[in-house]
Image (cartoon, rainbow, N blue to C red; front, top):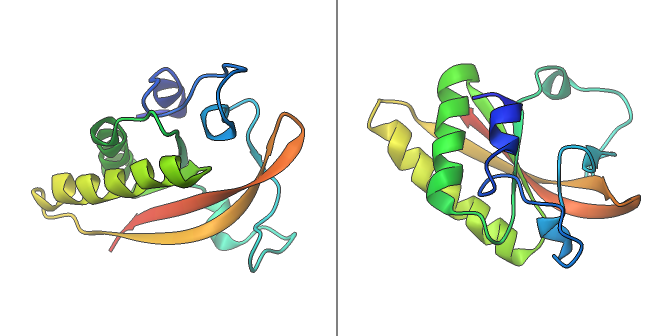
Length: 137
């Protein structure tokens, strides 16, 4: 699954509706990683050089749809990154990781999730997002 395919799915990447909250306003054109809020550095790490596909989740995302996208990216590239802002979006993201783990376990693939913070720019303002790096174990 490509990033463009994920951006066309409203369950995975949210719309840019001015009446929505910040977590729903994340989009590929507006959300740029600035630096990690915890343990960050200005120099790219090996993890950054092997960047996983980024899936952005909102409160309205369906966990099963996000889980399918996560599973597809894991099958294709071995790693996926999920970003969420706010409690509701993070709840949906965590549920999606759990569902994706069950999808992949049927194929003998085990995954792990490493959570961290990341600062993202939304409408020229910095927001702290939850970043879930999902990799094969």
